[in-house]
Amino acid sequence: MLFGQANTIDNAAALLKDLGIAESHLSANLKALAAVDARYLKDLKINISNALNAESLGKKDAYLLAFAIAVNEKNTVLQEAFQKEALTQGATDKELAEVISCTSLMNANNVYYRFRHFMEEEFYNNAQAGIRMSIMANPVLGKELFELISLTVSAVNGCQLCVTSHEKTLIGHGTDKQRIHDAVRLGAVVKSLAVML
Image (cartoon, rainbow, N blue to C red):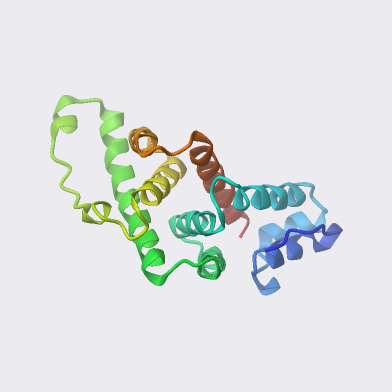
């Protein structure tokens, strides 16, 4: 995936092309920015390129993380684009399915643990969660990448307890803080892209 320069009104179409998305998916938001040659289109293009090409993530992991956030944001256009790129980078159908499962599980956990955090009440903190999480035991993606996706989705969904828990687990696995940082930055940028589509 190459992120070249684009001019004026073509910036929005070039952004989609770089992501492997047909120009027919040019949204009203992108058209509005392109109509006034908004500088933000160039920023967004650079942000996406930098986040997807983070050295600490590697191509396959970057596209799997991006796919997770596209699933989280229910953006089918981005899901299809990132799924295609992930497969090109060697991801398997089982890994993609597990990314979907992980994202769904994190949505349940993020709501539940945000509630507990908001309440700060002994009864809720001591209550059994009762949310089955067997996929975390032996993930197809490997524990480290599964945790990284869990952290990134949790950061996007704003769950402090989940973020701190997954970050601690990742550090315990020996994950470099730069990799954690780059994963969360990628999640943030993909979320910003989903707003535009």
